[in-house]
Image 1 (tube, rainbow, N blue to C red):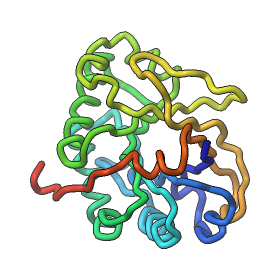
Image 2 (image 1 turned 45 degrees about the vertical axis):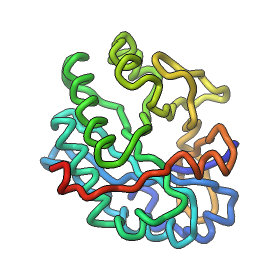
Image 3 (image 1 turned 120 degrees about the vertical axis):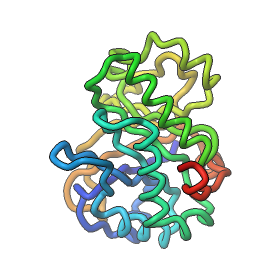
Image 4 (image 1 turned 30 degrees about the vertical axis):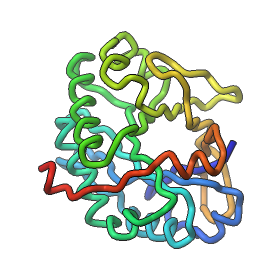
Length: 227
């Protein structure tokens, strides 16, 4: 197993050289955030700094999008990709240790069927522009409440989605339908590590360094192709 972090502007300025020397094997950086007081998909304030720091220090790196229940799924996907393009595309596209993009699901204001439909739209744009196997980052509580009885998941994607579980427990909580396994587990949000002031989320990757560095074999394509 490999230990990693997921971070956002909440962690402030990060010393990435110290992070890499602290047995941190991978990082997910929040690319987008939602603010109900402001419309649209907004970039994380530290996206560029964190992305550059991680790339310069050669850590396995992915980005995640924070789901916004007020916006259509396909629009969110395009904005997520555009934000990555605008900030990091040149460096990230040639980066050998990039991870698949992740979708962070934690909030819903619409019906289960509408939520499912909008998530499919998001995944559809990501798969066209990026490639297969986006990561679903969510808790068992959220998934079982809104999406667990949706058989279309297993029929449409045939287990292609990668599960990243958020469960702050001492023992791994296990996977849930329709996922057949989990690659990532966020097990705490109260860790302290050198290079970061304050608390940070810690995660396990269930695999080897070779496996985490070969999860992604695709490149971001030009967003204009899918506008």
